[in-house]
Length: 205
Image (cartoon, rainbow, N blue to C red; front, side, top):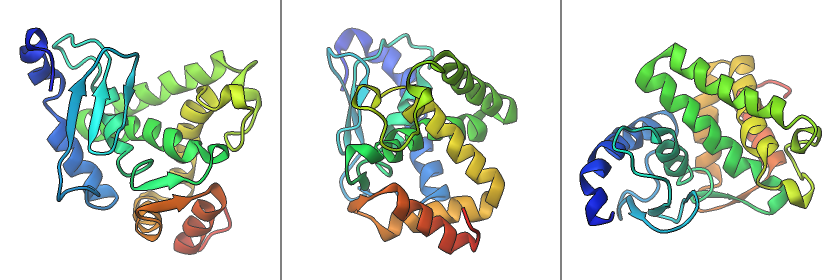
């Protein structure tokens, strides 16, 4: 649902959403709310928000897919944030770090390795820029003023990228799917995620 004057642009900006749903369903588990829907609603707010089955969209609507990464980010929250919810704010990276890495996964799938590297590089630049702020602290249980800061989002993304290349693609993606199924429609914390990935991979992480 978008404003009438943005309807033509929205066709372009949201065009690949169904393909994203298919891709994330393939690499994790099927879209968790498939019996209902997935929708996006334009609203006069800053940013976007992953309300379950209906993401609110406050970004511009340029009509050139400039914010496709945001579409991927908010959609992925329906697995990581809506299906499996962090059990307290100390574990918020399980929502936001995962969704930030989903941006990378979409770029890699749709546009290739160079696009993946570019998205990771943008996250890396954000980490360096925040080195005297949120990045001084762990992604788990940061100070309250940094709950939604660069460390949680961008450093969290890089932690997942590191984990992926430590254990390999098959164990990483199937392990995440297993974690999702284990805690589906419930809550989880960082230790539980670590334990699930250790059990699945057979490695000490």
